[in-house]
Every structure is written in C-alpha cells, then in structure tokens.
Length: 180
Image (cartoon, rainbow, N blue to C red; front, side, top):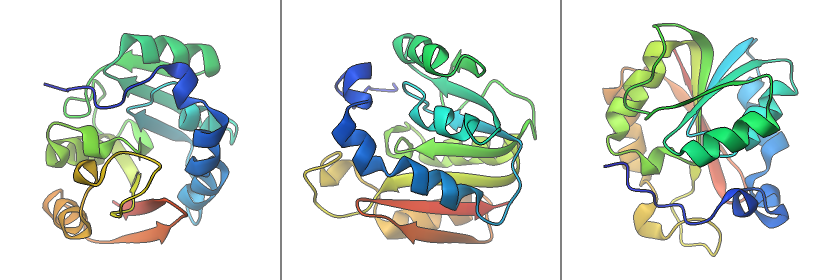
C-alpha cells in the first residue's frame, strides 16, 4: 500500500522548473483568500515546499508524509514546523487540530482518496484545500491516468461531507477550496 508514484528526491521536488509550474505564491494567496488561518496541516508535505510558503505567512504549520526522507527534508526547510511520518488516511492528530488542511498535488496518490478527505475534514475547523493537476495531458506532472477526473472530484467532495467548494484554475493545476 501507499505505493510511491513520485520518482525523484528532494532536488527534483525543489527544481526551479517545478517550483515555477506549481505557482506556489498564487496557490498560497488563493488558499488564504477570504479566511483567517493560524494553523495548517500539509498532508503529503514532501520536502515542505508549501509548508514553507504557508509558514512565511505567519501560519503555524505541521505536515505528514509517508517518506522519512521527505520528513527530514521538510524539517530542514521549515524548522518551525511539526512533521511526522504518517499516511493521509490515518492522520495522527485530534479532531479540529488545525484551521485548515492542504493536499499539495498528492490526493491522487492516496490509497483511499475518500478516507483521506474525511480525515482532513476531521482535523480541520475551517477549510480543506486541494491542489491537483487539471485533468488534461501535459508534459508537466503525472500521466493522465494518475490524474483525477472532475466528476470523481465532485463525488469525493460530496461523499466526504463537504456541501460547497470553489475551484480556481491555474496554468497546470486546479485549487479546490472546501469549506467546513
């Protein structure tokens, strides 16, 4: 389980081309638009790229990842963060521990996307944020068969108990803001 689909280390996650394509500043800005967030859980934090960007906004960040290597990298890039090895389907935090949870291009890798979303909703008080690849073939990101179809995303959101969400399209990605 939790088959690692991402191939590459910290250097690849933090390559200038990837950072540019992820539009990190725009994602963080849109994630925080219209809501005050003091704490955030970065689910599938990787090397902590997004955790680092949220921390720069004076947000207390925590993160989980299935890879010990990534947890150690995140701790180096975000020394103020609280990082743990864990899976998205079993978050090691109490109910309503964070104002928001964030999936940064990782929901498509969860073994059970619905369970992962329910867990994120459980530990969050205000919003769950999901950054995913648009469902279109592209040279950047995973192959089309690893991307989530729009109708699957809509069903997942409803089945996880979210009544409303909005979607912001970026160049290659889509940011979904699910309100609790």
